[in-house]
Structure formats: structure tokens, C-alpha cells
Length: 345
Image (cartoon, rainbow, N blue to C red; front, side):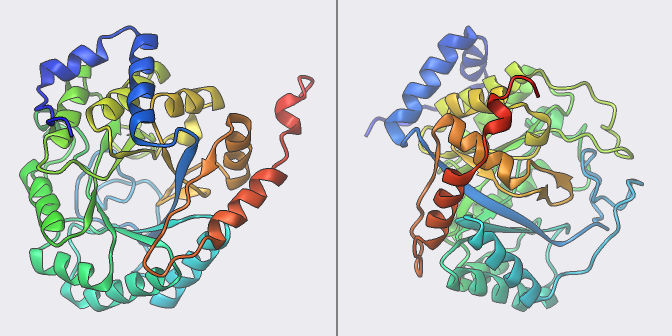
């Protein structure tokens, strides 16, 4: 096994500066060395506690500091969460992610969170949670319940971070990732493109992730979803080619990690998404909503998979079976692609 590269911002920026087609070729070559290029991991994300978050993340409609019209909801009951997980599995998802709008989970909620993990795990799905900052003991309890992944994004570079968030330090985020890793849970961590950052900031974010003692197993790359009422609602749109470059550089710098197309896919046309898959993206969130923002409908994803010849990845879990992959594969075969080919529409 080759020695890991210790990335610098300068090295990462060199990748960003490459001609696009050359960058895509390199990223696809790296991707094929570590993954089946036709397989895409499919996840579903559920907001188990919505809104009223005390943090001031300028991009987030769930912050209590901004008037976005979002109604807050208390922590869902365990059975409600498990019913959503059953539906996700029936629709072909292999990983179920549960997100709560907290700065950190309260101790009183931990037993319910553990039950959620155990219940989803028993269905044969991979489990993921994003709950904010964790204490080491909380990470250990989630690990004992069987949690596979914990998501905690760095969002952007250390230098730009303070322009976006002031209620939680960058080091706190890194510390949480360390506690998650120490508990034996796989790490999911990425960032957002379109916050007003520079290319150097994008490089800086990826350097932070790639240089972790163990790179994240999953790296979500989000395109900013501009929500009225948040401070970033009037930000400039992200150039699709800039987003594709970020996917490609993430793939090259973290060759063995899953690179996920996350928030913002609703704003991308099929051609942009296809180029992201060419650049090395191999995971998506599947379903009509990501926490509180729109996501492409399931049938649109199925049609795109079929057009591109992509397949849902089969994932083995402790109690796993292949039922959900078979369901999604069947739906892929039935997906109506007539509209795509009818030039009159």
C-alpha cells in the first residue's frame, strides 16, 4: 500500500487549477482503482428533531436566529422513526441517516436515540446519525447500540469558518470527529460549496478532511441551498463546473472514501449530476427531502440511474439481506424514461 500523501493547501489548489477534462480523467482513474464505477450507495435522511437550533450557522433554516417560516418539531417517537426506516428500505435505501437540530444531544434523549439505532440496525440497514457535538461517553453509547456512521461536517476551511458560524469552534468539530473515531464509529464529514468561500477555502476544507488520522469513510459535498430568511439567501449561484471540480478533487485526495452528492441536487440538471458521477461521486441521498430542503424525487433518481447505467450498491450489514437492493433494481427497470427521449416535450 502506497504511503499516504500529506496534503497542503498548495497541493490541493494545484488540482483545482488543472484543466477540467484532465482533472476529470485523473479523478475517474483514481475512482476505478478503489470502486466499481457503476455502483452508487443510496441513503435516506430523516429529520428526527426539526428547528429551534441555538446555533447561528448562516446557511441553515433550522437556526432559531433566522425567520425562515420553518416550524419546529420535537424529537420524533422511536416507532415513528422506525416506520420511516421501513419505508426507506422498501424504496431501496441501504443506509438510514437520522438528523437532529441540536448543538448537542441531551442525556435524557440518549436512550431513545439508542433505540432508534438498534431498531434500524435490526432491519438490515446501515445506520447514521448527525446530532451535533458529542461527548466521548455519548459516542460510546451510540457505538454500543450499533451506530455505523456519525456525520459531523467541517463545512469550510478553518480560515473562512468564522464568517459562517460563531457558536461552535472549528476545533470542537474536529474534537467530535476524534471522539466518534475513538468509539469505533465510522466518520462522515464534508462541507458546503457556495457559502461565499474562495477556491483556496475549498482546498483548505479538503486538506483538513484528507489529513485526518484516518480520512472519513464518507465525504458529503453539499451545494448551498439558499433559503429565504437566512443570511446567505442572496449568495451567488455556484458555477456547476466549480462544484464538479470540488467533487473531483475530493475523489483524488480521499481515494477510498465515498464521495456523496448531498444537498443541492434539486438545483442540478441531469448533465451536472452525470459529470459529478464521472468525477468520482458514488453516493446520494434518495428521497424528496433532505432534513428541511428539497431533494430530487425518487423516480427522477431512478430514471437518471437508468440513463447512466448506474446501479445501487449492495451493502452487507450485521443482520443484512439484499431485499432493498432487489426492490430498487426492479424499480430501475420499470422507471419511465419516455420524457427524456421525447424532444417535443
